[in-house]
Length: 207
Image 1 (cartoon, rainbow, N blue to C red):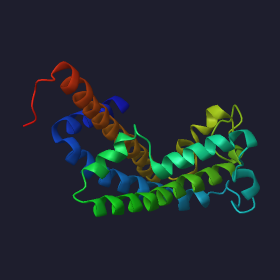
Image 2 (cartoon, rainbow, N blue to C red; image 1 turned 135 degrees about the horizontal axis):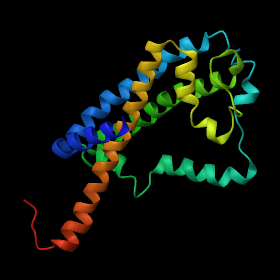
Image 3 (cartoon, rainbow, N blue to C red; image 1 turned 60 degrees about the vertical axis):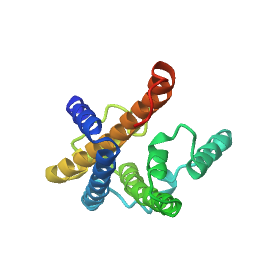
C-alpha cells in the first residue's frame, strides 16, 4: 500500500509541482481532521474504555528535568522556524504578499493546535482502555515504546466499527501523503537550485 502511495505522490508532485502539492494538502488535511474526529466518539463509547477524566494523571504525561532543554529547543523551532524547514518556507515565499504570508503563518499555528487535539484524545482513550476486554491479543505492555507506535491503528481497529476504522486509516494514509509530497518537492527543489544549477550547470540562465 505504501509503495502505491509513494508512486502516486511522486507522479502528481512531478507533474504539478507546488500547485499540486498545495491543493492536495488542503484535501489531505481535511481527510485527516474529519477522519480522526469521526473515530473519537465511537472509540470513547466502547465498553472497554473508562473515563478519560479519571485517568488524567496517567495520560497527561510529564517532562523530566533532563528533557527541559530539548523541549525548549523544539518549542523555539516551532515558533521561529528552522533554516532547513523547506516545507513551510515554500508556502511563505510563494505567497503573493508579506501580509498573506503572515496570515498563513497565523492560520498554520491555529491549524496545528486543532490537528493535535484528535491524537491527544485517541492517546487518552488508549490509556483508559482495558485491552483485556477487546479482541486485541496483548502479549506485551501497551505502553511500551514498541506498542505506542501502534496506538492509533489499535484504537481504530479494536475500538471502532469497521467502516469507521476504514475512514480513520484513510486519514492516516492522507497524513503520509501530505508529508511525503512536501518532502519530495522540497528536497528536489533544493537539489535543483543548490546542486544542479549552481554547481553542475552554473552557466544556465533563468528563463
